[in-house]
Length: 223
Image 1 (cartoon, rainbow, N blue to C red):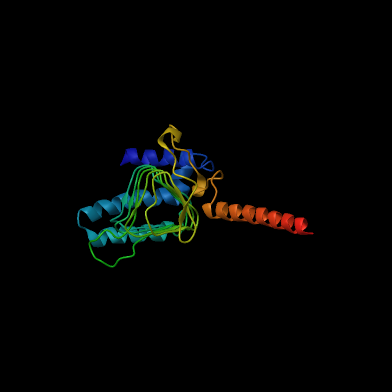
Image 2: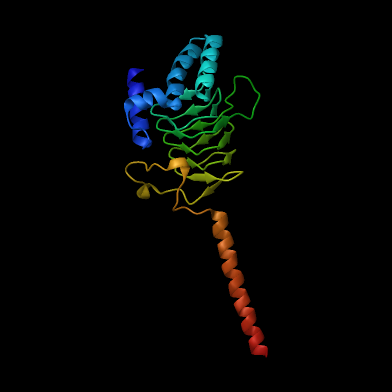
């Protein structure tokens, strides 16, 4: 557990330029507190101390504003930035090196007890502020969820999903195009990727302009 705490502190100092010292992270970062307390709650849950695990989780929620069900599986070096209003459900799984911003919900859409009801985030996923990921599906490794997106179906590895309901923007990177190390994108924002709906609208506008020019030319010829 001590090694995980050290990793968490190092992750925060790497990903948040506002973190000026280790002491500041330990005392002032609710995401760090929530993950540390969750490890205790999760251990209690695995040992079937269900009420006590829920109570520890409830205290953590009261202290940090972050609700992580004790049954949820959290990977290593997860970065919860700001964190207020985050809800992570019982059967959710968050992989190593994921980043989750404030207001995110990893929720379920089923009432079936004992079933997998919540999403799985593979390694390196970034979930922007206010995003809702709802259902029992997988968000692939390195994927990005834009702020306030509502994701209700799987997201391929390396893709970026935005909107309500969410759709994929840009294109999935090819293996040859992938960098040696993942590039961090705050809030899942990629400034070099364009929404395909905007691309379609641009193409339609260009086509309309061409038709208008063609029609004007035909009118001039008739005159």
